[in-house]
Image (cartoon, rainbow, N blue to C red; front, side):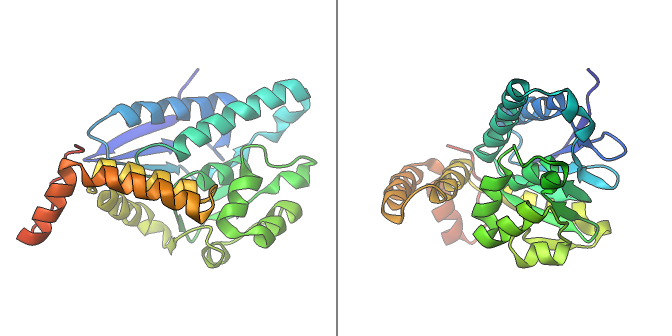
Length: 257
């Protein structure tokens, strides 16, 4: 199988790019390969943050709907579950993942973006859970993550109408955190990624885990988890380094210990 993903490592920042012209339509084997690439980056101690992006007019254009006719319910269920596992692995990855959304993020592409920690888009980006238009519905966690990110009413609006959302509306609803000119997308995203990559790795991993837990827990239960996680960070060498660097008025040098 020919790879559709390219990997560039720039210092502590890894850039994983889908390159499958013309629209980066994603098949089962492509999302599986993405999971394998992310698993390798998880184990790379030199990488502190990951950027996910696409080439051409699409971030990830979604599934190839011409394949739907060949699927039976059982085959579809196993394929969808496998895709959900990949996105859940990315969502819970100890390192931050930023989506640099350069163009269309439709269907499965929108679902991939939703599983990233931070979403930054260009003025050329467009979003949509278009599945309802083809007689199906989101299957890679779109109904679930979209609701948690933008709220019940807006999620129903997008999922049930299958309409396309433009960048400024995406920003207004909290679907993305920044909208930037297309020519500045990677520069701005790498700037954020470098900031994240300089943080203490243990604190970063636990902070991400606790924010994810907040979507599932009550405040008392989540607060108990948070207190335990915070206590762990206070016992690390990085905590000592963070305090000393603050007192010394210098940049900290975190080691992940």
